[in-house]
Length: 507
Image (cartoon, rainbow, N blue to C red; front, side):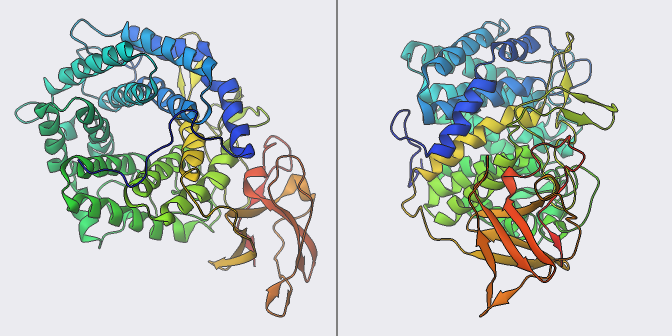
């Protein structure tokens, strides 16, 4: 086993910074202790809720449990722990006699998003085990997860159904991303059959259309030209590739994950620290981020998964650049997605709105507004609904302070910097991406910006921050002063008529 150079702090061992604490405490109150949501997530397994539409309701419990467990590491919150333990026991009660825990019945298993959802059962349970205060319960959970995984091994693998054929979506990379929790279980229960299964997944290459590991190692094909280009699921698979390196010590798998992450950073990570300007797909968004688009983009699931991949690389290598990338994503894309003012979400295909979820799903970059749709939207029989981005967001809110607690280079001095791309211009102030906001400025944010310089330096004036802001400044231009504030604070009242924001400004 490869040892991490750094280890995540234990519950109660550190105190997050005030802004980090604010978001953590807010999400505990608004989401993670919502027992109605937990009840719906558990009931989906009892009634096999994903059979009818081959859906992904089965991911919500595990995503939320992973996030809650990481938030607990940051807060040591007793009320949160009590709700989590209740949710764990409730899901264990919904295991079938042979241990299988799925939102699909036997006739529809290993199709749609079944393996993806079973992955999140493993993920959520194993994250809970990491912070579980009751050794007996932790042992019960691990026993249950062995049986749960054995049910999958009985029907998927060599001589059985190929894992790349267990989903009609994204060439099976969604199913292959179960690699990470399979290995995380192996670390706790080192059964040879689990390692054999992990090796089998690795040898498939991660999808039916080609070998993703080989492509990453070769480092000639950008991720947006891989056989499949689903950003979230592909990054999740490479989290598993890292886990395989941690277990086996075979360096080529570390090399593959590092080269993949660097390729993603080069071609697809935007200024705010997310990927995908076409829905949630790799699409050369590092270049395309300045283009106007009326489609959804910069998905919160992608933000959090990128943060998790970078955090794992930081723990393994100690290279601070990965921590910098976590910070950039957190203070811009992720914090910007937090629905601080409980705004309803517009639903373009339904021509209506739905009540507020704790996270927005998509982040605009050029002349557009937040709140446009709910990523992974799924209804329940009683009218309750949830989405993938809402379920994953809490994990990102915790990953950031956990990583920051391991750094010794916080608190550097900042300067305003300009970035030019595609005939447009953007500004950053330290890790913060700045933006124009129609609601704040009450001005035309489409007008070209011709900023002034003195002695080769940008002319600007820092102002006291207003509610929710981290940076507020006036930029001096030939057309007069313009207001720039941190991206995360912009566009939060997206139902206002003047709700558009823009990172990239016309130059």
